[in-house]
Figure 1 (cartoon, helix red, strand yellow):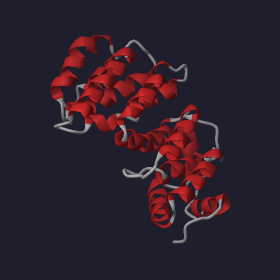
Figure 2 (cartoon, helix red, strand yellow):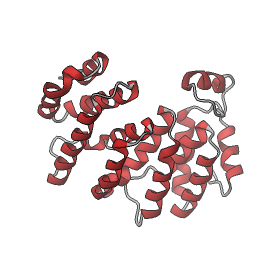
Figure 3 (cartoon, helix red, strand yellow):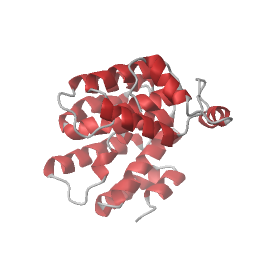
Length: 228
């Protein structure tokens, strides 16, 4: 599988995996007016995994930026996957590119894939939480949501390091500030964070719910308590 050197080649590789009728279904499901190719996620995974192996970071960043700018559903997901990597040397430019995408978030699937890439870069340098904290008060709902989705990695450890534990408490503070927000996607993000945290740090999850659970929407509180 040859890695693309141009945007046209990347789009052609994606379109080669189109499934009849899938684009229409995706458009109806995601409810955001943009072009959908009808390419399933496993095919995007396979393509981008091969491209990551064959391309330099600079090449990946260039193609990812071009794919994102198309505003095509699968192209944006592919862009995010191209830059989802735990270890990247000298990742400042990648970080800047990922941040430039956040104001464009307008649908959960694309936002979640991009947040996965962003989370890897935050995990590589927890000081980046200082910048993410600015998202908490954004007027853009998807940016506010991204502050929680991009930090989900902080919920995954049974024995976090001291900096990770401090970061975990910091994000829980953000989540507490979100509780009065009645937006469904914000309530869902708070619940998601707490649900995942409860698998590894049930005491903190319970403490949050004891303090704020009564103010959460019922569906979010139920989701947060799922594993407690």
